[in-house]
Image 1 (cartoon, rainbow, N blue to C red):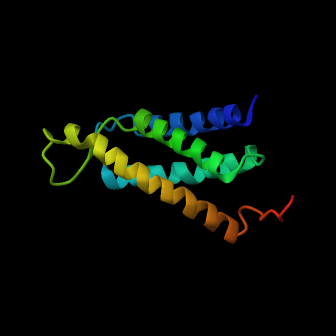
Image 2: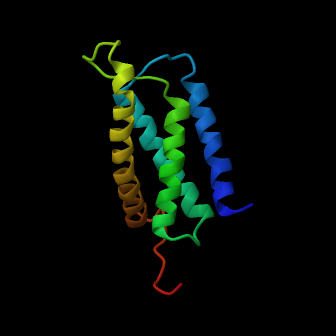
Image 3: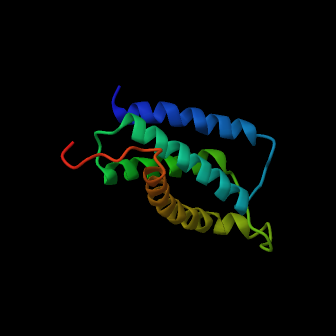
Length: 128
């Protein structure tokens, strides 16, 4: 299996576990969706770093964004936004997703930096 296939297999497990854990909930509040996305991001970053250490940083981030985008589509049917009428929410749902995905991109960068600075990831020496 390629590194990307291994990452997909591992992350699909996380996606299914998340879907099962919230299966009885029809609407997820935007704050809860953001928390789940952050947890999924941290898990995915660790999986990618473990499995695909031969890929460049931008390639790793592209894989992460692709999988987290798919995670969002599989897990969140409707994200509830307070003070927005339920009739309007489906219309703005794609905009909510776009905003959250922009935030996820920044979260990936921050997570990698935090993991490197705290010793979760070992810094690689130049040329190694």
